[in-house]
Length: 375
View 1: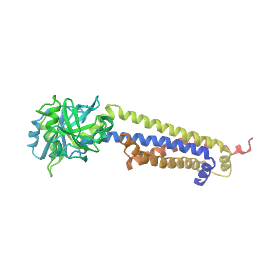
View 2: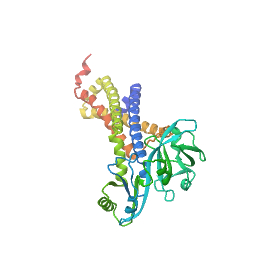
View 3: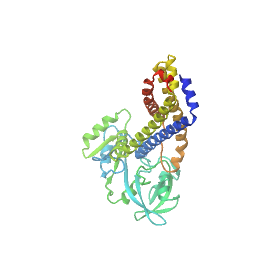
View 4: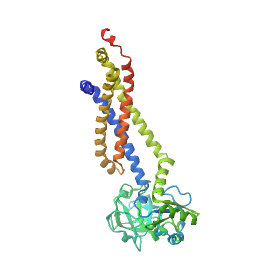
């Protein structure tokens, strides 16, 4: 029966091509939406995920990484004295205005970190060194900022608010979810740049747990001691940030809606073309039934057509997706293609095509072999 399905697809070349094209369109769109969504989620927590440390201490009722409020800096010393803590580090995340050379301004996200430890700073440098931001008005700009801030080179001077800053390095890989580019400065400089933080406040305290101590036990211990802050493991804070952007902002729903529409469009195209093919070959199916073929054997022909369209469309879509990853990157977008995503899309494609063939199955069930003798 599989052979018969192949012969039908080859015979109906134009219809088969249209069906395959429809599957490729729908599946490619599903691939793109899932990949871009996962890429956005990765960028939303990229600083958290690339920062060494096991525990993050944030302001009370904080919902995400980008909009946390200041916390007292003295907590840093109290946390450091807690049993089971190997080291602590302070980190500032705040917002600023970046003045362009040709005029105008862009909003930026300022990361204030300790260049001696590198905790919270850029993890991959294109030019310059983390230590270059020490002791002065110096900054590192991520290369992803080029679309917003223009062509920035090491040694140039730009203004953040009214402070003249020199670019001493270009980082790579630290792309911001909010589209406001990341600019890295020393921790004391971040305190000076944003007056509302002040010299007595921090934004995050990052904790490394000593070997032999359980993270959750230290989290519970810190929660007992410090009631006016929120305390998370790194994984929990990363997921909380992703959930905020995916659920509370409606971003996730928008992508889900597009995926559902793509799925339904693909199902409609496949179902319509297979149904038309079934009607066109209705007498041939009647002949098979007259020769003793069961409904189940004819169903196999229909399902085989759907299966072949699914596999063919999926493979072409996967190739298109892999090729287009670089195009998305050149446009400043992150598209994630993972084995798990590939398997999920394959499953969705099979469900889409096989379900679409159900309409044709119902038509086959009602075939009367006597149709051969009708005009």
